[in-house]
Length: 262
Image (tube, rainbow, N blue to C red; front, side):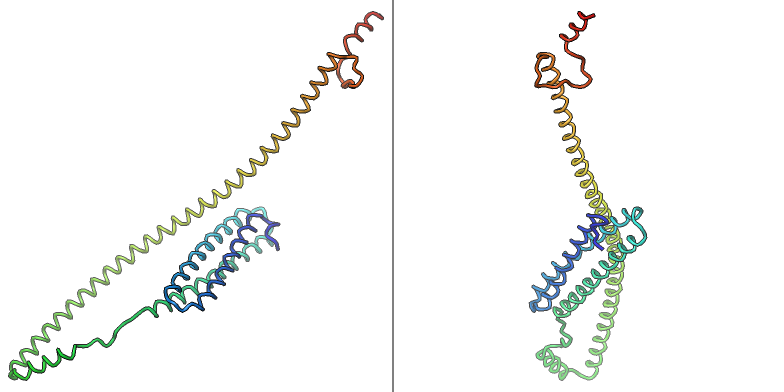
């Protein structure tokens, strides 16, 4: 069913969403052929912007559907809801693709060295020092190193715990900010939708005013013409080229002739 039969604005929004879906499809196909990591990152950013625009348009579509819901029959409302769900499903598929490519890009850029050990010259120095020490000195040195290791482990545990606490606090703060930003975005979307509706209403009022002005001008010309005919008939009553206007009194000459007759 063509949405223009239901609402021209719905048809326009659907056309914009379909254009974005085609751009996203072509963009992900292009992303598969890109090998450079920096170019992949830029492509993902562009695709993310398109998905954000698509999400905003789907919200506008949903608001317009709800505003027209009371005036449509049940089958039309069901068809519009199916269209909206289909749009959301297709957008979610592109979001999943974006997450997949982002994860692959992050794993490719990650470089971790798991085999970082002591230098060879440092090991040789420790062997030379140990050969010049007695057994008791070696035991004392070992105990001292174990104590230092235990202390380092305790310090590491404290740092890890502090990091966990900071991460928890940061996560809570980020969640609160995310919720606040989500509310702000929803309010901005509502304002944007209201502005679009107001702009459409102003255009309709402008067209009605223009039509009313044309009608008033036409009536004004008719009145001017009637007045001009009346003036000509009064000034030159014997002019046979101008027909008498129904409802007007006979000229003064005729009135005098009738009076003399009686």
